[in-house]
View 1 (cartoon, helix red, strand yellow):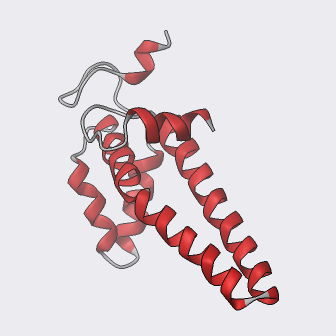
View 2: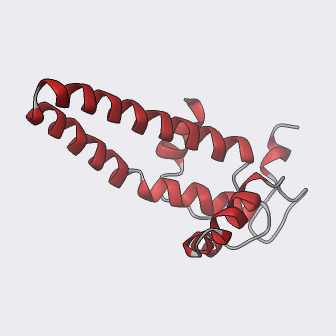
Length: 126
């Protein structure tokens, strides 16, 4: 949860710098868990009342909209860590192959030492 809050509070729209694999994947894990939890709650409430379910689905939609920018930002910073431009996120628009290629880039270990996008984020821990 600490990584999720770090991205949302400290780096909400920060597309500069680099993000470690741990920062990206912990953010994404809590993002997905939160969306799935809201969806389950909405479906349960939908069986009780369509209005209650609709309200929770509306809240879920607002949460997704509110988290689009930090999700793109942490993705761009993750790509910076492997030496690629943040615009490489657009490769996911290529059917099948683009998503696989982006996944490979996101799970690849970052470049050691400084690169054109900033200092090594792992160097802070050493």
